[in-house]
Length: 227
Image (cartoon, rainbow, N blue to C red; front, side, top):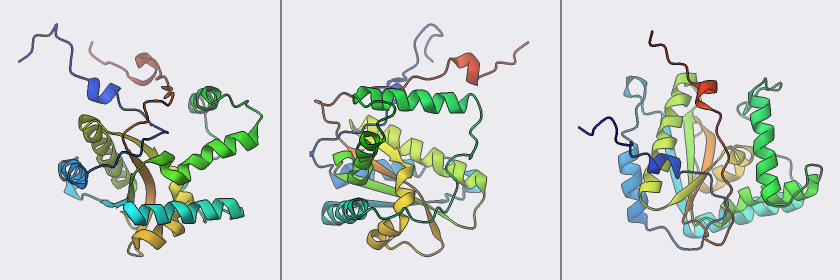
């Protein structure tokens, strides 16, 4: 076993970030299959394995981007939400953390806080998967409960860490739940499934500025009870 003074090997975790600018370099299907074959070993209560993943590349992905872009250009309203993404009144400290993220995200793009039009243009990158050549959609059965949503989160985190181990990056996107009908036109999921989120997958664009969001101090989120 490693000595206690050795640093843990955490690079795969700490190097993961939401990348919003990908290169056109294709992701080999063999790599995606290898990642997902390992990711299914993510833990789940009573081994339910509640996630249903759809991986989209090539012509179907191009078609999805086109359809989503057309909806956006036409000003189509978002689909009726099938779950609540955030509480209507987000309490502290989460409200402040979200605000800080917005300032960093749009500040890095040179977009002022009150420039709503520019912010909307930046957010539109979601519907192009930020240029990524591969996408994953995670669905859950509508009849499942909150713990199974947590299980899906562990599966998605496992996928993202395995992608990093392969030299790839990703960006999880709840935004796609707002266009769930358009996604369904491409992946044709069974009616009992609900779209939780999408995920952009690919190699990052080395020319882009990928700002990292900070994390709360450990003392804010972790309590050690040892004496």
